[in-house]
Image (cartoon, rainbow over all chains, first blue to last red; front, side, top):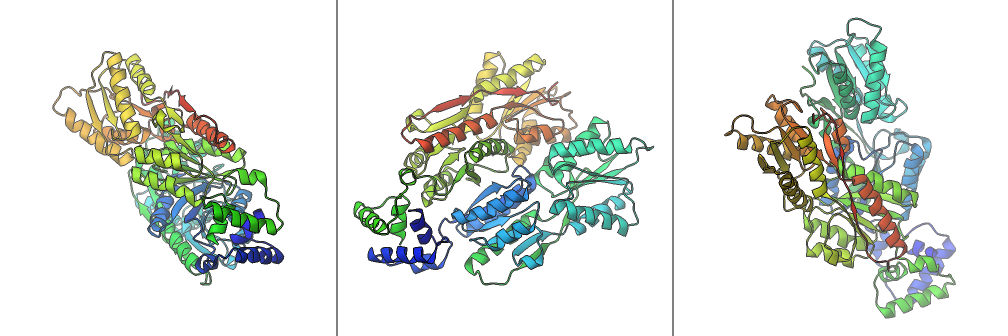
Length: 319
Length: 319
């Protein structure tokens, strides 16, 4: 029963099985719908966006943008969470064979060869919102973290802040690695040495609080305060850090300026509102959705690799 | 072709068509899997959670809870956004017939007869996380807003605040109507008159800022300040309001205490951290997921109506 269904839905089956099923179907006297048969798509009118953590507001921005594009094309968008582990990302991509969506945009936190292989072999079109090697041969849309870091550092310099610390997320993630590299380059390009660097356990608010606490334990041996600005690798880490600053009686931005990254809805909601590097999550979502729709239309087109440039949204957490 | 697939997947088909297909399948020599045939479910191993706005952090809490339960049962959870309009909620429920998920938890912002009808007729089991009439005969899990409002009012009273204003969301929504009623009852039960009431255009942060502005234009004609506490119908409205208080030089909680509702992740992230009525969104998510799994197992069981009781999470936005 399951095998018949597999064949009719275009899922993998032995050649013998395909023949037997097709013969039986012909005996029934139905004319196959060639459009339905030629496309693997169009079965569900549903597209999936897979992100590491749906509680991270950067993905909300991306989701709204993806949804706008795909719903205009007649698809419903559903969002699913992979968590931070690459094995769960791979399971999600492999699970697409179950046929519950016609395409996938995945924003992976970690990338390995298994993930790339699962994307290449996926039964439905996949677009990566993130950074995978060109050799993978898949459509990608990514941010330019190094350029974003440069905007953050140069904004702080322009405001007279030179004693800059950095709160990053895990450096074994794609964004963590990109931001570590970008921060080092941006500081060097401006002749600056970081006051301190801390690596949070993940990209969440509680991790930002812990990292802020660790930052101060590193600085305690130095006098005076030792820093006048902090760049955080995302808005949740920045807001967590700001709570630790407040707990120590430090005023943002008078004592310490804070710059986040992602320019999520939280940046506007936080107090003071957070200056944040906009890494183009809405634009990346739009472009990824467009690439996915184009790939669904024509699976033979050459893979595209798009880079979206950052901007800086200045708010009251910097002078 | 489509008809064969419909029959094999247990979707509606004429009796004659079912017989012809079953005969053909028997000729193929496959033994039908009776468990798979007796259930309409198990086709996608995917369950859907539909919420009004995935950018509202209360749904993040609910989503994490639903996901925990359904993933332990071997299902993937996907989340989709209906928006605030009942026609889009109805379209989502009707669209479940496309077979892209085995069940649905929907948290509707607005409910009408069309929505109830679409749920009753839905091809897959549906559980409502919200309030629909008992006559609908569907599994529901809902909050107790009136009790939550009583917790908020009595907490403020215990802290010596009696001049209380209320920022609600739209009263033509299910939560807006419940909270309006609950606030009126809680104030009356404590012999209080509200200082002012404002209705925001929706349940978002920008709407909270606008409502805060409107609140102050209502109060301007009165002296002195006229209020020492505000209850907001959710955390996003509360945080929007707190920005308006800060813009007027008012300190939370010294000048004005603020209580939100939902006890979302934003309550902890906001500054000062927000005292908030926990309407049990995690517990509601868990119970809704359990009801859905039970309904998938046995579609003949009597509908259950569960009410989850609120608690108060006290933080620094109240004295």
